Image (cartoon, rainbow, N blue to C red; front, side):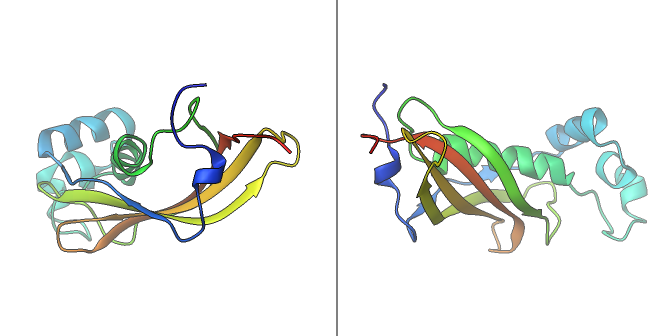
Length: 152
């Protein structure tokens, strides 16, 4: 297996952080035009009359950026790579606007050995995405499978 973190390297309460990532208006609109073409995501004029009062990112764009920050920045490299097994919760409490700088904070909330694959462990984390004003723009609870150093 490749070098990296194993199941045994994760403990409840551990925290990891990403660097900030700036949300560019043109990329935000391009994402929405392709994947979530709602007016508040693709048209500044229409967005001005929406409940947001201005252009806002699609929640799915926020989720994609957050995933990139989680995998590439916040999560330590995993031995042999990880495998996502599910998302338990996903919420967008505040909108993301052009120019926002997002960062992800990850906290390990649970660990357990897989019942069906004793050579793997399951790690559950809570990812919180914040903007430059420390407003929470996304929360996500997810579980991933990671190799164990030694199966019991």
